[in-house]
Length: 486
Ligand SMILES: Nc1ncnc2c1ncn2[C@@H]1O[C@H](COP(=O)(O)OP(=O)(O)OP(=O)(O)O)[C@@H](O)[C@H]1O
Ligand SMILES: [Mg+2]
Image (cartoon, rainbow, N blue to C red; front, side):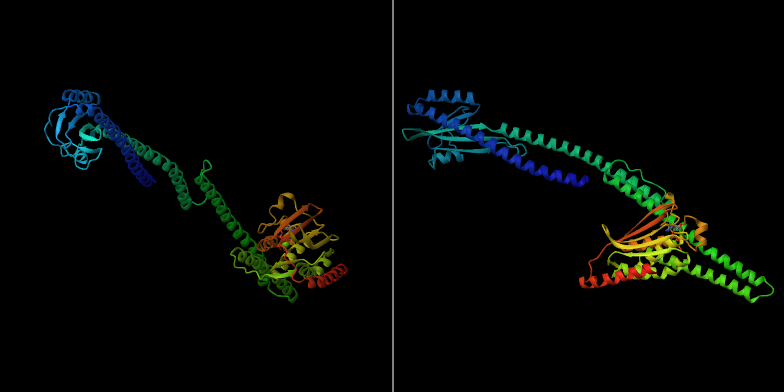
């Protein structure tokens, strides 16, 4: 940052100095030269009558008074360039060979001027302007008026301007260095602090938190880091909970089987009936184990994103009808009325076997958690948010405090009760995972001892064929009727 600031500033300064100094020097020197040339012209005009009358004394006095007024050296030259009068007397009688004189003496110019460095020392130049003007009287050139005046003061002023600019540049550079160092420390300090917090997190785990101040980008980064740490911490906790819950759930049927087998082994005489009972119990525990392992595998595969969805356009009503049919015997056994209401044919893009799992789990829960004599109502229809599947029961309901947890893995409201019904608490978490994988959403409404309603929302797709739709609406109606009959 520092280097680039200094680089840009230096470049800027060099450009400004070069252009400002060039323009100012040209303007000031040019102006002074023109002023002095006007003086030389005026001097020539005044000298003309004296020269015409060959009044040497008058001419000399004129030269002296002009020299005093203007602080310059005035000379009167012959038309050929020989000095007649010199206010400093040193050049009288000398023929001047200066270019300005030659312009008039040889090239017949009216006036001429030039800038000359008259210093003997190369390091400290001294600038003087030479101005020559023809002295004419009635178109006759009587002589040449010559003036030498210092322009050094203009160059001194330019030098002063240059050094003032240089000093201000040094000052600006110094201030920008300080400002850059200050600003970069403002940026790097919080970054370094955040970096050390991150390194600490790598060493000690994700319980450490950054302390972001303000609203700048680094503070935002700090907040993002905190959110990420919290998520990782939660994931860590969830993983531990999951493993301990899974082991616990697997241990229960295993211990039951072990007890059954041990009692079989310890009995001296094996009666056929007892053995059969024991083996039936063991078989049931094995089924339970199998179910838990299957559920766990489903969840783990979804988590690892390696559960491919075989999406197809399917009529959700038909799928609900087929799935609910499988549950009719269970509902009948539990003395629960199972109703199906298919408002219209609703198409969704979904994996049929996964969606059947969703419907099965929800209706299975509704039957399981509804006392005998109750009813379960399954509805498929179109709504504001797409296609919905609603499973409504008149069961025991879910306490409000538990509503936030029912989708958690292994969560059961009443552990003893749902264990008796064979539940592990994985059903709803599988349902939610599948619904989310379909870009859908699941909602629950419940009142204790009144009933529960689960609503699954899925994005609707256009009906594949209008004709087909009409045809299937009739089939749907028939199915609805037959569902009611059952
Ligand atoms: N329709 C319902 N009415 C009342 N409580 C319900 C209902 N559906 C779910 N619950 C409660 O939510 C808990 C979690 O349900 P979930 O389906 O995940 O597990 P489960 O039914 O106990 O076991 P499984 O893994 O066999 O489905 C249940 O134990 C039950 O307490
Ligand atoms: Mg369940």
